[in-house]
Image 1 (spheres, rainbow, N blue to C red):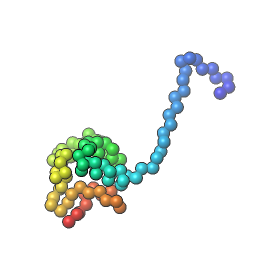
Image 2: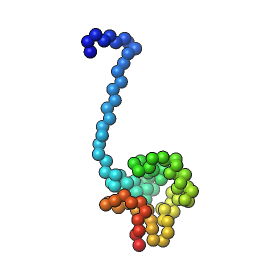
Image 3: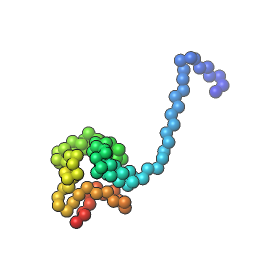
Amino acid sequence: MQGIVFNDDDYIDVEFNYSKPINQNELLQNLKTQWEMGAISLQTIIEKSEITQDVTQELARLKSENIGDKKEDIKTDENKELAITENDSEIDKEVG
């Protein structure tokens, strides 16, 4: 950088971002497992999920649907439950 004089107040800000591939199915499965063990909150799962854009809105929707922190509350009827499979990321899957 010839001809450029920097003063003591001048600085250069450099930021490095590493793009690592993330297996979303594995991430969601790990979050689900931790939630089932009681080791993580539903809010943290929503925050970590790449498919959720607005955490506050999603929590409000869950509250309006009466879905709480209990595993039993996730069931939407007798034949459906929250499920994450290895082949896809469907949340609401028939298990009956």
